Length: 253
Image (cartoon, rainbow, N blue to C red):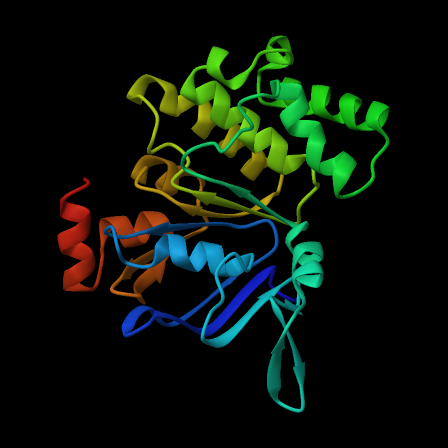
């Protein structure tokens, strides 16, 4: 079966700075992959390449068997038009570190906007779906609240519901709990655990090692733009093979 995500020697440069230096990995359907590593290791850049928010300079990325951001003809890559890339991006949900909710729209309005404008879903159907998603993330009573009236954890759960409203094949999480007060982290991780149990394919950049140990099918340690080590989370955390992995984990465990 085709992996949901396949990265083949992905490289990304900013001028002379090499941020990704040949990243290769696979995520099967229904799996959760957690990416860990120090700041500046390329984790978030790789995530943004997956849905073509960043253009990569070399390699190939496939989601559900389809090349991301490019079409290939006679062995050469040709970048998709912005419209075609946007159509492709609809199938990949992304949750950012800082929520990125529209401050002038209620929780419900934040969730229904993209389905109505992008997928042309009838408003009544979009509203019903949004209320269902708010129930799913434990915020059914906050439909009419504005972001400023919500805690950070509540805003992030609305952001997750907003991403799910587009019915994505793949969910990307870029350090979704790092901007939260410690007591709010659990409510967001709880929603993510529920998604994993329901079979959502997820790639999660995180420092929450307990979440990775409990929920992930695969743990990848990145440093300096390369995959240093990967494996089953409990095994890798208990018995890392690379000195760089050992040094990093010693700061977290």
